Figure 1 (cartoon, protein in one colour):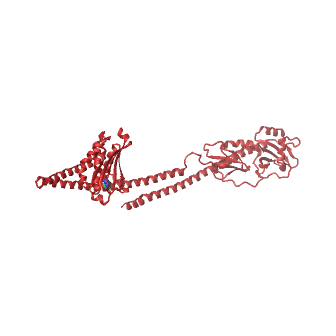
Figure 2: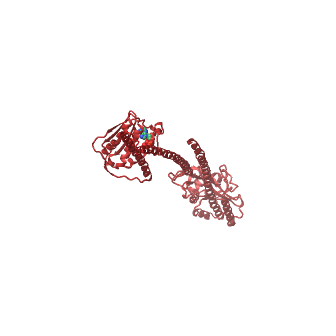
Length: 551
Ligand code: ADP
């Protein structure tokens, strides 16, 4: 029956709950992966927008510079130098033609900056290398293709270009090869040279960009962000980080890249914007998967333990119901036997059918004993119901344990004698006092003596001992009966519990004596315990620690 119930429990509760748990966990994992991907996409998009904004800014600066450079009249060298001195974005200016080569700067009296400038572009200025034909020409192989440009950014760029074209009538409609910028790598550094070919194509007029000033304009795009887990960084053509949003960390070493690096501009080949994920900060809390996993596990455990608890409760209820049924039949049996005896002897006495005075005496004694037994049984049942309902009250008074024990033994010695059991009393006549309830103590002692009488076979011996040690007062009732098997030793103190062996089933009983005994003694601050007796039999031990006694 129990096996069937267990299988049913497994099938109806454990299997579906575990299935739900496993499905929930796999769904959570998938969801977490999806969220991670979405997050990564958003970060990559941010990096792409940043790269686009840098490109836009750089083109605005370079277009404006070329426009301003074109406005300066070719012969007005002074105006050109003034412009160079005033404009923070201008590093150097030049005018070059294939015939005269460099007219500006004047190579006869160059300053140091002009000297290095001329040196830097020596290949172009000497005519060894042809000037570019297209607006942007790179020295290096062209950078990898740009990712698709966000629509908004493209629209902004187109608008800016239209605006630019409208505002620069001096240059007329822009020729694709009339001007442009040349990224120039020299001594590991990048330089940007802007050039304008005059209409006749004979002269090249130009400007070199002050890249440090441009970088200063880039700085706001890398201001520290509120989400400090994501770091955006700008790397140059060597892959070295030039600026980044978080200065606390060295991101390239500590963080994992979120998505691929985004190229910045054709004017800055191999410069990239990186998005780096520093991951959750230590102590920043548990991840989504962990949290959801913990919740799922809690739910699964709660369902399983709730189910197990209900199952256990159901099992206990069934067991208690069965025990109560057997209790009712046991008690009825216990009541019926003495009642039959009482009626039989009482009728014989009434009808004067007793032949001798000796027999009459024996009948009266039996009537007295049986009615005393009935009283004890009824007392036990009444006490049980009072204890169950919490109505049991005790007197807390100083009682003499020695007297009570000796008196109880004396009152019941005859019963033991007629059963052929020697009742030994090892109680010194020294008074031992405790605070407690006299009736309760008497009742427990009686229950133990009754049990010894019931379960110890004829011819044995029962010993009652009272011992006072510095720490405890102990009364033991020891018999030479069958003892209690290990697995029943605690359970015999449960209500209605009876060891189901041949001896117990032959002996009438309610299964209440020991459970009531333990509850009464515990309520009085002590305990009732079982231990096997050396050489066979049982020892039931009532004990009170001294401190509760002295209270
Ligand atoms: P009852 O004796 O009415 O069945 P108890 O609560 O007094 O109920 O005892 C519970 C069970 O403990 C008994 O049914 C019996 O199996 C076992 N038991 C109690 N006293 C002894 C003893 N002295 N020797 C062996 N078994 C005992």
